[in-house]
Image (cartoon, rainbow, N blue to C red; front, top):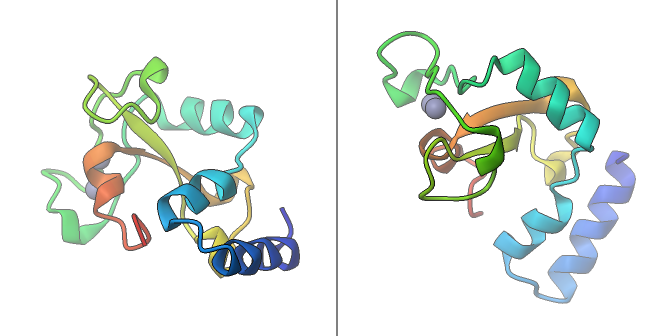
Length: 113
Ligand SMILES: [Zn+2]
Ligand SMILES: [Zn+2]
């Protein structure tokens, strides 16, 4: 999605006062190919490297289950995260896609905002 289009969409959603969580679902628009490529790159493990999360190593590396994308509470649940939020002009390209376990995803700045 090009940034211009997504910021227009963001504005429309704001005007309609759709809850932010719902808006994120609408804007979460990685293609299937991108998700699959990101998953392959991740090796099925959380790609988070945020220093603030206190991972035992640099990377979280939590083992994830492909079938449990978005299934909070399920074993190995994960999300495809926009490194730069779509509302800030981030793209849906593979380079902006990060595979995160639920814990890490909830601890990103843009979660639930
Ligand atoms: Zn993680
Ligand atoms: Zn993390």
